[in-house]
Image (cartoon, rainbow, N blue to C red; front, top):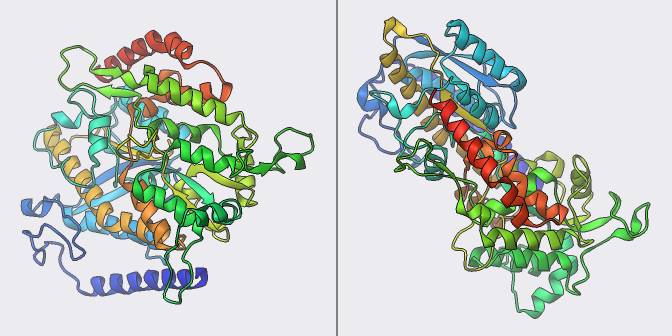
Length: 523
């Protein structure tokens, strides 16, 4: 199966190369005369943007994009045709942006650690060396706090259409501050998909512990054309929970405790008796910065925006943060983490070592770990569990190393007309996100994630559930400025401390920090 998948992936990449050569042979003078300006969808029925109807032509204007050198996927400058399907898609995206708008993209990639000083120094000097800023999520937020980002809601003749599918609805709601928006993300960043937080499970371990129970429940796995089970009874049972909407925290905890309730794994193999060790096996492992996904997965928010607020600060600490639901969540997780079946304190690369050795049932990680290093493991995937069955939907948090984009308010005005220059940048941004949606996202999701590393349709379906449930939260994006509030519930659970007292001690300081953040953005 995996050999076939690898061959199919290679064939798809070669096919893309062939299509690119054919497209190049068609030529054209860049005036877009062969474009159907009334088409609302492409040949794959993916929605198109509205830009062609404006017949935009920026006469070869150079657009300078400063971007960070991190992320799982290269999302900026790909200089030549390549057999890598994702890089090829980024290359094609750049070509299309330049062709459609008649611009010249120039990329300046620098280390994330240098980004803030580089941008702020340029702003203070008045050099205007950049037009678009794209960097690590929390770095972009701090750059905005330094007064370097334009509020796109105030740009006249803007071409950004936030109703389009490449701008996730949750992103529009969660990244707005009042009616203002200083930065944005979504399909425009390939690394959003790679940073989705998920639960991987070892299907072999699942079968070992739970096949007999699943068979007693009458679970009958789907079969392939040869009459063989596509997945084991246990794996089918777990996937059915996700399909049925019954996958919640209690089910996850139950599975890690095993049929006898004593906990999956063996901590007796370590160097210290009765103590958790890297050589042991477990029901659940993770690392601190991934544990916060339980909070988001339970449909709990950190910061909420009130666009109708008449106060100076439209941002509020969500009522969820101090709710009884969060108290119960922290208590439940804290009790579970104490069990021998859980290992959440090994850090990096400890938890990866355990996962790669096949000695854990579940691992909470980011989707990018569906990579080559795990391809030989019999791995399944599940979304973050709900708080309980009454929760309507699944929700997926994004790990921090994704890219947020923004328009630099220190840019050089072309022809002395800053308003027209801002308008041009909105066209670039809209075209960028639109082309990513149709060219890059399908390659990452359908080939790299769904096809290349998925054994069955079940895994493909789970990726779709995860992708469709992605949520953003300013409490995560501004996390360092907010005392790391996104990690507070998970850290309290790990430490076994009371959430009531933790929340009480941070409530007022967090409110003051929020006031300071909003004030800095409006300066």
